[in-house]
Length: 126
Image 1 (cartoon, rainbow, N blue to C red):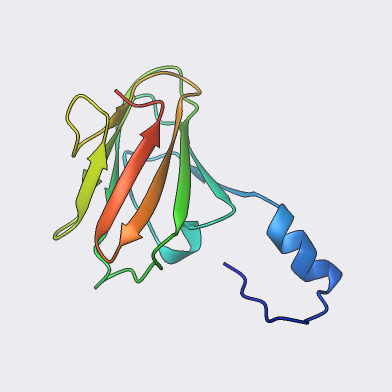
Image 2 (image 1 turned 30 degrees about the vertical axis):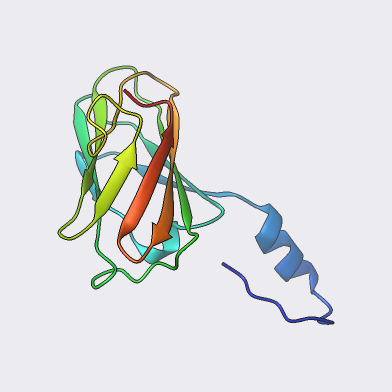
């Protein structure tokens, strides 16, 4: 995420980086989130089988508190399962609150980091 100081004049490139959402496409059956997935990123999942997204602990991927990662299932079949890495706590309104699942095509969720190793998952989950 870009950090700016008071009174700083922003360049066109800096302004564009704030407004533009970038997309990372995943076609495989597993994905571990990385620092560059946070903020202004949409991760698309197109595998028609089961895909597992792992949220890694801060000790291995140092995302800042307040980071938001947006994920969407674009495949017509299969599911996306969001799982906790070692030491990570995940809370959601899913049927299993610590292991939310995205089941429908074009359903999306946001993963929000709320403290060092704690995350919320909100959106189109089961």
